[in-house]
Image (cartoon, helix red, strand yellow):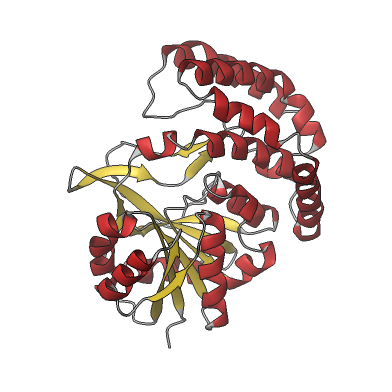
Length: 350
């Protein structure tokens, strides 16, 4: 008998009205039979609950009052585990998946017992059309804590086997074993939204699992970069939160200089783009003693599950920032070469 798979979809505000029908129809076409869909109605209302129940009758609907994306995923995953799920799939609602999507995700983990997470191959779905262009074949971690996609905008190409993802698995579409999820304790709900996939992937790696690409599990993502840009506070705060929670003291000391200059650049960006209030809110977060206590507690908790050293994971971090949607000559011709040179220097002594 096929192992039981749980698919977790998160609704937020108008997502269901915009995206549910296409995602639902593609899940209904799956050739894998033993799965259950859970929809977390994040920032729920009577109207959205009614809409979800009417338009996806076979899904289990779990309402939540706030918009915490990490907590919503945890609710779905933990409810699914209580219901006997063996594998947990996180899937963005703004996607459409191929009929063998779940078959290929499960196969990836069944054939690679050392892996805790397998990411699907994610392609772009833009202007109402499925494109033969990549969104992600795994994501990249920058040594200053940024995260971005690998392969974005490139033509799709054949990938054989199950290559290891050296960075992190995109939260858009991945499968995780119940053992890995339980061991690392799920997602850190302090992250709220953004960098949640970086955080989860780093924990899974430090716990000794690999993260792989299930290249035959294909999904089309209705990706909108503008949605991410609007969440400047969470993106910047969680970049720092990731570094402070996971990085060794030695690592933080070694990256202090480029981190300082990046801070100056982010300050200028915030001023020029009307984001200064949000950036000051980031600084204020790290000045509160209760937040620092949470960070210290999480660092101690991670040591109990950690098998690999942070330096072993950090060895695969990259030095060039490649936000493909932003063409910045200063970044391309000045900042990236300088960071690459600095990273080459300190990588040897990390």
